[in-house]
Image 1: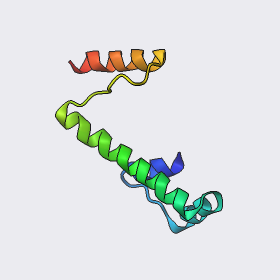
Image 2: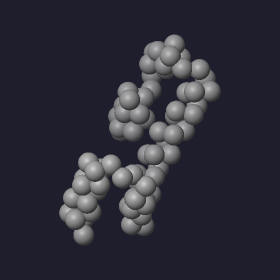
Image 3: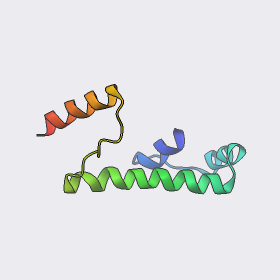
Image 4: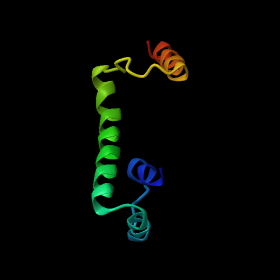
Length: 76
């Protein structure tokens, strides 16, 4: 979670010290994959709203559906 916060929030950085901590828990391949997924989600969260791209309904958890409905209602 901390890696995603450091990659996402402006002003936060992935320092050399923090990266060494990550290397104790993850292989280089795992760090590449994890960073790519976080970067993709950051991209998607900025790109999709420009074109009004919304969730495709694949997540059928009641709490997610109610939160999505409430957010959509506020936006429209």
